[in-house]
Length: 384
Image 1: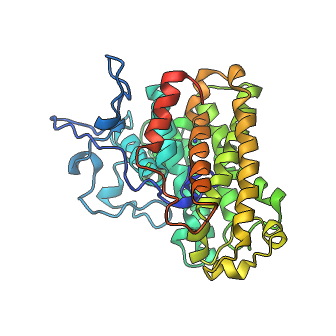
Image 2 (image 1 turned 180 degrees about the vertical axis):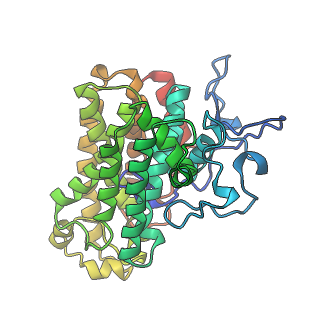
Image 3 (image 1 turned 90 degrees about the horizontal axis):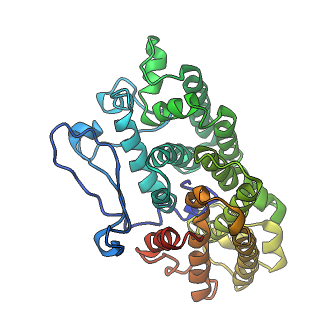
């Protein structure tokens, strides 16, 4: 399955420029709860042409903000603002879930679409997890200095601890705690932690992995490169499996392979974006082996050897795809919302091959229906 800037495919930044269609229910008392529109109708026919995924009622009243209001997540959030106090509206947290689904759709579209394969309650929980992951993953992109990123991530650590201590669907008496839990993601995390659907250590580990990215020079070698993917996309997949109630070794092994394949593909797709920001997230030893200076990438003038680097990394990703798919008979169907990323990764690698492994090509963007069709394929066949 997240996150913007995460090593799981969303490194290409909001690559889903064409999102799933938004369906608005104009009904009195609408609380804004996201409602799933099945990808397959009662007649067995697909609804690709008519949109798919979740229905997101979005009105001023239900979302708690005027159109164009800037969504603030993190230490810069004004918890006294009426726009940001909707996270705990209603004991069932429907507004918080809708806000989290909004964020997941905007910042991690493919994993958000994968939630269509999960039961409704799990979809809500996955939306909270994805929103959290997306917010911590984009820290490096929204701060100008590493110290500001550390402050932002420390806010998230404190929020996780506060949410774990609250463990209640009701607004606590302590105004300071209530202010933190008014944040829609924090309120959602409190519910997940309270039910044991997640444990604080899993979430804090995701924060720690992002802090390590703030001022480093990039992975020194392939092992470091893969370790970063394991700490981000891999850890996210493990957390999603816990939410889905899947606790088998084959499922964990398959999810780890899926995370590596998706993460490798995502980092390659994000190469041009990272280079424009002065970053190189590809393994430096592999770049050196193919005579690709890091300075050339940062300057946006990649030498021909970069295609060879991409081919080698794509080969590694494909091996992880094969390993993940080889376990499909041993993996329960409940794990499909995580493992459908195998289909996403396969599509990204095919697209990369189509442009002859040019990581700076402007044709790396997948077709708008590629991800919905991948989810539909898994839904119809039970295969990833």
